[in-house]
Image (spheres, helix red, strand yellow):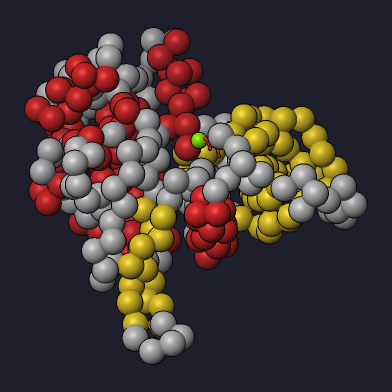
Length: 288
Ligand code: ADP
Ligand code: MG
């Protein structure tokens, strides 16, 4: 580890260990090192973690934080994930910045950031066809982020948006109905279906809900369902009782957000449908 990279300052505290800036010695390029201590994990959690690291490795997209390699220290029972460094901080900090100065994020910026998150999410949700090596059957594996929130959307030095922190993501076969039912994530961005622990599945539309919350927050500078406790939040979410939307933004943008915040997941658009919006189509064409 220390031969190849020089350790620099810590930049965050991850759920399983410190996140640190590092410099690759041979070309001075900066990276981020996320450490995951697997010492206290169960066998199942460990398998899941390996699975997650493998997911990251497969995701290659200009709007997804690029994974570079993993290093393992068996003595410390720690996996180090080396990934692209995003020097521009995260979207939560951007929102905070505007809020503290009583300023609005320009609508054009909101559309632009939205388009980039959508392109990243589309890459995950579209998935890819994989062949079962045993019986040669094919199935489509899609990736759900499951923890979409402003703190997990990073910015690089060119103001490109990069979706990151796939810590809770799972690859799942679209064909099989094995959808996760775990209760995880940050309440503010939690969808109604995710709230219903009682067996209701969660799928790509859950990520869409969270995305709706994020775009809303870029405009209003607070989440769509402000609440002082979980019960109140829950109630508001179930009713789809969205707080008032600032009038400086277009009706078009408001409608776009509200479609994602439909309580019934079937009524929410897919990433493909979102990207067909006239305000976004041009961003899609630019990257094709
Ligand atoms: P956690 O699972 O703890 O939420 P994250 O991947 O979200 O882990 O990282 C936590 C914090 O560390 C982020 O909010 C961000 O400030 C910083 N961070 C993580 N990854 C990067 C990165 N690739 N580039 C720059 N900062 C990062
Ligand atoms: Mg995070």
